[in-house]
Length: 324
Length: 259
Image (cartoon, rainbow over all chains, first blue to last red; front, side, top):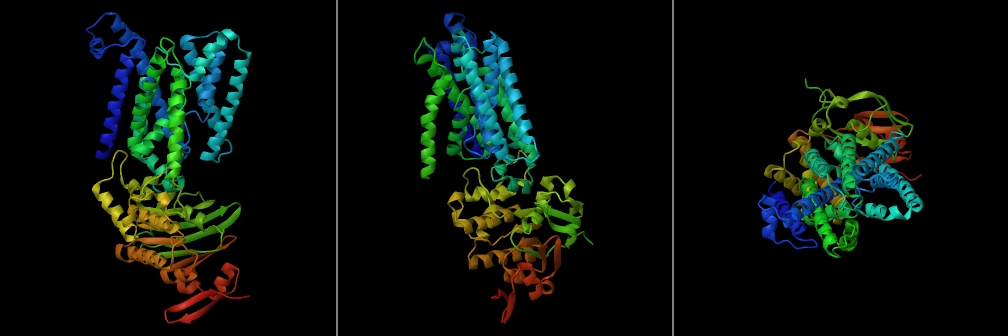
């Protein structure tokens, strides 16, 4: 229990630091005193509006999205017993993207766009679930293959939709595909999903430790493996669906955040799961701050920043792991 | 009288359409050492899984301490019965001590963390199999034999009344084979444990098992005390190869004859 304290407190400090940076930096730099006064509600000027109405909602969205993706990634890695699994590997983001692009093509925007993305994610999840269950025999490999093939199908449909779309809509579509935290106002759902998700998966954390040792071993040690697998699948999928709905598909957070933590604090999921949520949230918040400020006033899609940071980081970790 | 710690009633079991046993009745009493012998692919591992309640039989039931195993929550079963598998398969790197500690899982509640007492149990199990010096090593750097000993230590850390062991001495060199089997025998004699193990070496089975199951395939199973069933005729038929024996100062030794 005690050994969880230091890593989790450090990660919480990192989250606070990222939050402060996100609220202070943008096209205009706000000094920390003004940020503090705005948060306390003592300041009603222009800089308070900037912090509370523009930066704060976006920061909350970025943090919850990153946390949801990292948590979902950590769960998927155990479910598929594959350290390279990420939240999108089973085609959930593909289904969401097809539905969202379809909605954009029809000129639907705002909350309905989010609803379409969520519905697409759910349809994809149920499709993979149904197909992988099919003949009754169930294995991680079968689920992975089914998911990857369904994802490939969605990829083809995305290409098709982009080809037939008029030029006017293409830019919006590309932004959606690369991940965009700018358009999301409703952040209540993300926070609630994150808290519920954590509350549901933390009691399972030691089961996940055992599951990582192989399914037979887990079963012999009293883990109800079949039930746990479906719990993991449903939970990881729903977390991903809410993340994709909030911000489009944002790459690498779900893969890199759990991975960095696995290397730094080990594979005890009682520490890893809350840690991944904190770390993933912080990473995306930092990436989004960079996306907003690097070429200000021009904004980059945050997915571009996470990928640009994520690719070299991941390659470095991979090389390091092979040398060990 | 207490019910047998492990019992099967009318158990029929198959793998890949081949019958392993048919209407098989077995009673294992606490404090007994059982061995399972048979050729490759005859279904020894599948039988072990069925006895652990991890493979559904065609018909019949398995009882653990008189309770039907199929109705027992897995966690409760894991507090009584531990299984050592042929090979382990870690998805993520782990240390030797962490791996042994996994054995405490069925004894802890969902929110409970391993206590200092749990750590003492795991360390003494590692000590018993001679891995105490390697407790911080990553499991993927261990040799095949060290991995087997770690798997044994994990079962000892689980500390079940009944141990089902699938080839516990596979990959072990001579002195570690004897060390492991002596260790298991001490568990039975001194701590009242019970064990059933799949073995390939007839001579080790003769020396370390009180009773044996011979799986002939096609559903035929022979059970009895080691002296009873270890005849040249049974063994030759079991392995499909003439088996001979020689008397030594330390008992009968079996060896494969030349054709």
